[in-house]
Each structure stands twice: as C-alpha cells, then as structure tokens.
Image (tube, rainbow, N blue to C red):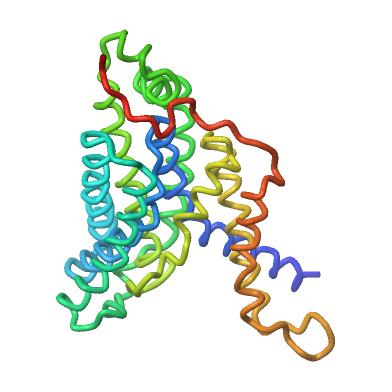
Amino acid sequence: MSFELAMVEQLAGSTLRVSTPLLFAALAGLLCERAGVINIALEGLMLVGALAAAAAALQTGSPWAGAAGGAAAGAVLAALYALTVIRLRSNQIVAGTAMNMLAAGLTPFACKLLYGSSGATPSLELGARFGSAPIWLAWGLVLCCWAWLRFSVSGLWVRFAGENPEALDSAGISVNRVRWLAVLAGGALAGLGGASLSIFLSSSFSRNMTAGRGFMALAALIFGKWKPVPAAAACLLFGFADALQIRLQGVALWGDRPVPVQFIQILPYLVTILVLAGLVGKSRAPRALGLPFQRD
C-alpha cells in the first residue's frame, strides 16, 4: 500500500510540474482573448521565452534573471504581434501563425549564433535552475487573475474590450490601449511559460521544445470557457495526461510486451483533440473576439 501511495504522490507531483508551462500560457491566452484578441501565437511566444530564459540564466547563474529574460522576450514578440493585429488590423489567425513560424525559425538561428549549435544551449548548473517556485507562482497568478478580472476596474475594462468594446469606448476608455496592454502582459506570461520549460522542467533550451504546448493551452482556455480557474483545471487534466504517458513508457500493459512508446506519447495530444471535439460541451467565446476595433 505504501508503494502505491508513493506512486500516486509521484504522479501528482509530476502533474503539477508539467502543467506549470500550460498554466502560464493559458493565462496569457486568457488575457488576450478576454480583451478581444485571438492569440494562437502562444507557441511562438513560449519558444522565444524558453531560449531567452536559458540564455539569461547561463549568463547570470540566476533562475530569476532567466525568468525575467523569458518574460521580456515574450513581451517583445507580443508587441510585434499587437502592432500587426491592433494597429495594422491584420487577420489575427494569419498573424498568429506567422509569429509561430517566425519563432520556430528565429530560435535555432539565434541559438547557433550564441552557442554554435542550432539544437540546444549548454546545460545549466543546478543553482541556475528553479526548484518549485514556478509552481507556486503559476497558481498564485491564477488566483490573482481571477480576483482581478472579477473585482477590479481594470479587469472590467479587459472584459468589456472583448465583450462590448463600443460601450468601453463610449465611457472614454481606449479599447485599443486596453488590448495592447493585455497582449503585452500575455506575451510576458507566455514567455514565463517558456522559461519554465528551459530552466525548470529541463536544464537547457532545445529546438522546438514547446512541442505543441501553446496549442494545448488554447484548448485548456476553451475547455475552461475563458475563465481562470476552470482553465487551470483543464491544464491540470492535460498535465496529468502528460505525466501519465511519461510513467507508462516501457510498462507492459498486456502480457510481457510493452506498448510501443509512440502510442504512449500521443496521449496528451489525444486528450486535447477529444476536448476540442466538444466532449465537454460548447463554449461561448467573448463576443468581440477577433474583431478589430476602429473608432467611428
């Protein structure tokens, strides 16, 4: 019984760890989309954040400096995205896809320039990596985001920017300014999600290490109906599926032959597809989501 309890505790700990990047990215998407801006660029924002965090931690030996570097890199790429979709009113789906492609090409190029390898950065020393701090930070941000959206005036502005931007504009609040700030804050949060990959779950940046987590965060956002706490619960579900597939690799489920590892590795993505297929019911997006705002 003690062995079984230890396995459950290990699985629970793994779930909390691997869901942490998803939590940061889901909160990033939440801020953007509650303000009315579709953000499928989370994958790219996490990727540049992961590289910047690893580079900053390598340079300074501090994981907090790495986290700051990751957040800053995510905010810079988010500013470029905000410029294209808010200022220039480009198609948000196309622009987000372009940001993901830009990050996928830029990160190995920058890694090659900095470290002579396009595949990975040098490994971090133990002192330059996080312990459990990102877990506490992520869940603290979930609670803060819930309280902020529900009780603060600025949180109300964000909600109106995505639901009824005309009413917000008639109250004298700049809709596009609110959206700019939401996208920038979302970029910083997504950069923290990437940082938690490279200096928390791993000890270095590796090429395409996000592995679809940005899209999983979007699925969690839809699962949670654009609300912080339900979206966090969805991240835990996806994190559990990811932790479970790690545990099941090499385990013989039928007879003496283990299940092929490729089938085990698709488990988190299979859960994501099932969620997006509508097994959890329909979600209503913010009414003005994806619609550029132009003052009459």
